[in-house]
Image (cartoon, rainbow, N blue to C red; front, side, top):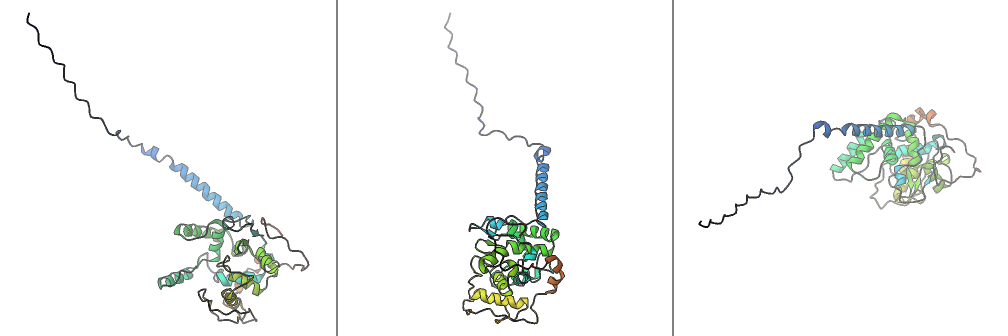
Length: 309
């Protein structure tokens, strides 16, 4: 028998191409994709409810602290809450004259002042503030310093809440108690004790004007040792309060470094630019500062806030 030729091994089948990536998974059903939406909505409603409850509670309760106090680089803080009847009327007149002369007319925003500030900026001037007392109260209580549209938007929302849930006397009372008047010195009671050795109910118009004059920059300017700009600004505030100033009627420019050193002198005048009838309208709610015994010792203004004096 003839030898059979050797069989060639069968050719191996070509290996399938290796996939470089896994195939895409099918998209989840629409119902699964949005199943977390109700949870997010409920969480947002809870957050809004909590914010509403806090703002409403502060309509009657003194805040134990504020966002600005928690961010203060100076410690320990000096902060003592006093009710409105323990604050001199001169101090209320001074901050309205200095910070927000339309406080009793607007609903939280002075759109005319905002427009003037934007026009001045477009004309090449510096961007000056146009915040109302209501906006400053909202910012000091709940937010942080600095600019940005996000913070401004949140500030506007809190301002609307405050203007809706509080009345004007309460807004002014809270503002005077939480505003920073010096490094680590919050509230008019702590400021009066630190700078003048007296209580907030005993502040004179001249002292009130000096305190109001430093509010735009309390960490740079001093109410205890006011420089030329602060002195001129205080004189202007006194004129707006209804006292005859010994300086020009216009608000001094911070950039003017040639202002002379002066002594504040005032005399009764026919009236300033602040409508004092607004204060008369709310006199019953503001209350009248109680008489204080001059021999009564002044308590410490440092530490936690006191709801009652």
